[in-house]
Image (cartoon, rainbow, N blue to C red):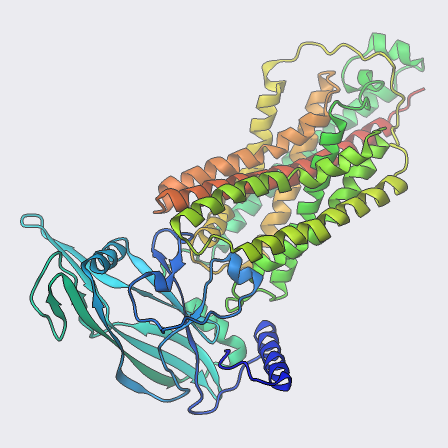
Length: 609
């Protein structure tokens, strides 16, 4: 992109304007028109083990052809977070001009470098190039295992690449690389004989890298070139159209919700009929001659312990609910296509910072309603409830990547940028939201007065204990998303491009609906046993879905993936824990507000003095 800086200020300004226009065109998805013979830059990006998608290294860490001075491409925040480190290559490709077996460079590899290549090929290293924002994948070498007695183990290096590029008019539509009809150069341990122009001797190996370029006309318009990339299958296709599975889950969820709602409404109807036909009397008389959820009407709105922490959980949960909804809607609008590297990462960071005002507002508003006094501490707790675990987890994961030399380790400039985004945008918006919430908070609006002396809670049967409610309340929402969860994991921890955002929106709505209904049902059973400590119980019951999601992540790692090694395992389990925490906060918030609305409804419907 940058071939010269110019010596005059006017030249510098023109180059800056041109570079900005190119970035804008790329972001908006506009085609960059080429004329025949124009240079089409091919960037080398990264290499890594095939089965560890997040363990990637810069392409030039391998002993390969490289320019004397490496020029890196300017990357977006999302690309950096995705581990991209694009740099200009020695491949010289001109638009619509074929090339046949052109020499790239000749390398004399030392014995150590040969061993390095052998190790990379044995670990199934693949490379990623980028041409006109189109990723190109291929394997570094070839490995063959054959026979038992005697056992044969052959390792070969691909020294010739065929680039096949499709175009329509003046635009590049698709590109891939192949090694068809090409023989790999054997990388034998120790010295060996010369093979096909490859010299071996004195512990060194001389190889000549070549490449060919073939252009093919395509009828696919530029606006639909993402479809061509989705149909390409370098990586195994595990995502299929799974409407049948979703319909099956939807039917089960509808039956479950219908069962809970109908049964609960019938029971409430009988309760209302029984309670409201009793002869009129004072509250004390009701307490002596009745049992069930009505008898605790003077305690059910008694404020819980750890009020600040509860409000912080509700605030951060509301923030992630807003964030998830916004991401899915943006995806449905087509703002994330396969050619915009790291677009979802960038959007998630920006939205997380902007939605911080939601967490501050919800947390401080409810904290004021339940007579909280330390609202400054509440804002600090809200802002750090998720950001502190996130920073700790990222520190550990990034340190492991830095130690291994992976491109997933963030540069210092990116770290400072993210820290500045939180300090200058996220945290101030949390404070502003908290101040607005505190000033606009009304009264708690409890239908019943609360006594000064709390009522003694009777002993509860085992099936009403917190652990049992957490198991029930966590498993049912998890079962509603278990099918879709596999596809999400295959996208996040694999190399699939998720495109069924309409299904994802349906599953997200199902998840929230199941969580709300299960929470209401469990809260009713809790109150029926004269236990009024529902505040934290409602959060924990459905919030335990995060535990099931983390258990599933362990199952996925062991049984559904081939990931291994310290680098990949640290990132997988670290961010899986954070994902489980996000689901717990989000569903815990939905569960609490559903239970609170239900309790206000049933006690407002009673005829009490």
